[in-house]
Image 1 (cartoon, one colour):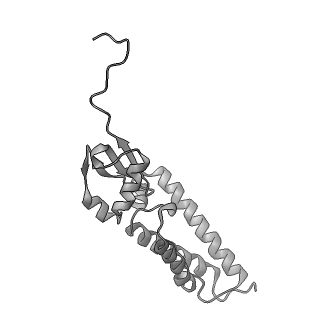
Image 2 (cartoon, helix red, strand yellow):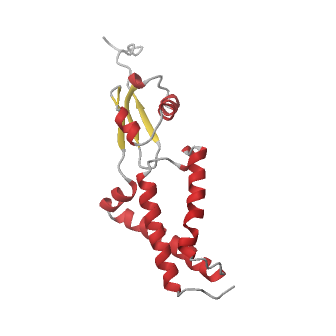
Image 3 (cartoon, helix red, strand yellow):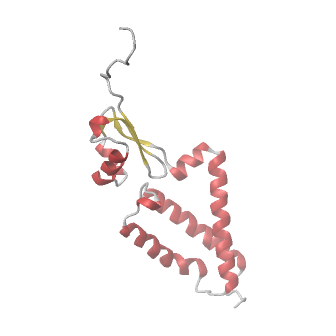
Length: 166
């Protein structure tokens, strides 16, 4: 239960390698929040965790190996967060940049395709902002966390305020 089949440092190195690999792989796969995941996205994450398990633990199912791996993964995650807060360049590499989806009613479909967003994803964000179509949008941004923020266009022909002088 407490005996390791490999030296402790090999578990740490294995966890670091797998963390870096998955970070790159998931970064390449697009910008979706956990709440925006489709069922197949969740299945992918579950299967990925199982697929890399043996690469990390080398078949060692001891409690100590589990502690080492969990501690290493949490520590590297905290470290990546710490570095991201201090280095804008590193943050861009890890998290990406916000991207314009709609500007002054013009929809950039290449941005949707590149980020694997569907028309349904966009329509849902537009409806939440009170916009019926891209024509009603001043600016829609795909944020680094996968959220779509929408700024509606301001109405151009507002009626004059009551009591105002012409």
